[in-house]
Amino acid sequence: MASSEIVRSVGLLEKYSTARHDLGFYTNVIVGAEYVLPQSYQLPLQHHIYRACATIIAEHANLSVEILNGRTATPVFARLTQVALEECVIFESTTTTVNYHGMTDQQLREILEKQHNQDFPDHGPLWRLLIASDTAVPRNFTAFFVFHHAIGDGTSGLAFHRELLAALLDSKHHSKGSVVQTVLTSPKKPLLSAVEDFLPLSISWIYLLGVILEGLLWKKFEKGFWYGGVIQKPLETTVRTTGLSKSSSEAFRSLCKENGTTVTAALQTLVAEVILEIMPANYTNIRSNGAMSLRSFIPDVTQRSFGVWVTAWNEVYQKSELSTEGMSWKRARASRKAIEDAVAARGNNSAVGLLRYVPDYQKYLLNKLGSQRDATFEVSNLGAYKDDARSHDHHLGGEDPHIERITFSQSGNVAGPALAVGAVTGGDGCLSLAFSWQKGVLAEDFVVDVMEKTRTRFYALVRVPSQESDPSTVECNSEDLYDD
Image 1 (cartoon, one colour):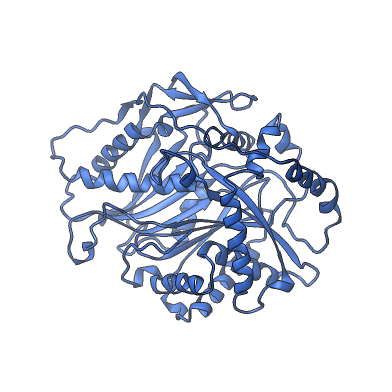
Image 2 (spheres, rainbow, N blue to C red):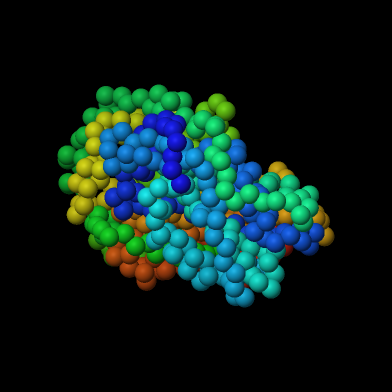
């Protein structure tokens, strides 16, 4: 698949993702969703998926571009002449991959790890779609949208599934004899602009001076901080996932509102408390960072748009201010304010704006090898999936396709936080968490301990028995569980 024309230059955040991808510092983002098609869908699954993908590609230019000059200071997006679906849509069918209630955490882990550790070809689309289905129930499948971070943020992954479900809804009207195109001509559509073309991302002298002083002085003298292993290669991603029941997810959201905070802020505080509980007594501080969407400030960019429009923020958590058992709601409220302040700044005085002062992204990243990280962990929350096209009576025999559990995970991040926690609530109303890290930076036993203790504290807070933790045992529907 050759490219035919330059679409536009790669933006600041997109260039950062391009550099770390080409260096093997970060591979991809994955948003996976479990789908159920009704019995009225009698055509082969490939027929419906190919038609749906053709519809999505026609609307979103990000899916038909590649990056040229990625290892230079001036990378560009170039439009591909065509997209061959058989090369970027993979079908896997087994008798054990999927059952009616969806994948187990072990099955999810195996697929996520394999996909996170698989790079994209040098030329071609910067995404792929893995469809894992059960030969016994082919209408039930899990779709894993795997994509380069330069063409989309986490919300873009959720947007893909919104578009896929809407396209599947339309495909039920196609006849058995209709022709399916698998080689598509790329649409002549423009890419939406980079975040700096919408927002100024200004940097004040006071903020810049603070960043310089922190790098030169404060980080060298800080005590009691723990960041995981030093920045190192090679990158091999390891993943663990866990699903929480609908009733506990709803109860947690209610608790957050009652205590004046948000789900994102509370989850971040909860994970921080668990990490500091596990760490030896001489470690008393950890640092988190994260990304929040700026879409609400950008005209013509919606929850269905594909692109990278986020801002970054970071926080320090001290053991002395956290709870040793339940949850420090006071600290969670402080985290909410930190997030709200970062979003209200609209990208000004942030790490994103500082990227314009980096002359050589690859050299900047390579110089970090062997040094200490800037953050211990991150929590990225995509919020709750709410489908406009979904039939709300599907469980009573409705004839519309629908989405159940959703999983969001990132590859290990060589120069980023040691641990990444991806959170999202699916169409079943169940919160799903994915813990990912670079092998060799954290011990597997440590991450499993963090995950299990997070679950234990979560269920203790909401006072729902942990036996309900399997989302498949709870009748769920789509609800907007998050206000972030």
